[in-house]
Amino acid sequence: MGIKFTKAVATGNDFIIVDNRMGVLIGLPEMAKVACDRKRGIGADGLLVVEKSKKADFSMRIFNPDGSEAEMCGNGSRCIALYAATEKIVSSEMTIDTLAGVLKASVKKDVVKVRLTEPKNIKWNLCLMIDKCPYKLNFVNTGVPHVIHFVEDIEKVDVKNLGAHIRHHGEFSPDGTNADFVEIMGKDRIKIRTYERGVEDETLACGTGAVASAVISAEVEKMSSPITVSTRSGEELKVYFRITAGDFTEVYLEGKAKLVYEGVINV
Picture (spheres, rainbow, N blue to C red):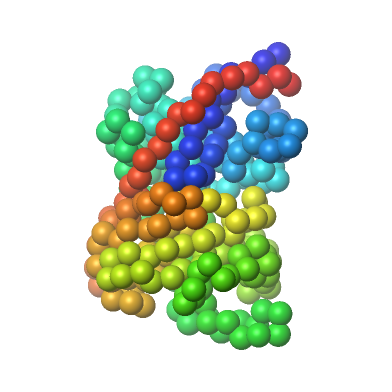
């Protein structure tokens, strides 16, 4: 049988979207491994699955290229919101059920803005030994775990090697973490590169990583909302937030998204 899919991209993150509201698709982890393979399959940073939900307009499940299921994905949520609006599954204003909680999204042409769950479990000024060297890091969960490391020249960072060491560090076991490298570019602008757990490599962008980097930068560098985040793809995201009694609330991620093409996966 063939399974209809849509390829979508947001700020350099690319995804395969399938509609499973009828609940007939099985073996989703294996499907993700095959479909996301850039040499033998379609190629993508993840598989997004639309399912029914009792809590929201629909549910989004996210499978990484290694078959693991993620709690949430910032750019993935923007892609699936555009897909749902385009396919008339919902209106341009919607709610999305995820393992990290219910998100709100709005679609205006090719710009998608998503209200994410509030950042939690923030840990400041962690000093960890990585490959026999001390690193000063910060941690935050923006739906998925992220470690933030500030650098002076982001182009000189060995993201794949250092990111892998941080991702697998015992401090973050057993689930591991994503690793974001951040350079401050101005009073309201940062540049980031991200090593993504599940992809096990650097990606061109990461929505939850952009949010994590922005809120940590807001506190460390006394920056205010909104913060513009330049990604490896060359495209930009905007992160909006409020700080109330030291907590980050009303956190939004905004940027462009695009549905690239449709096809059929033969399984």
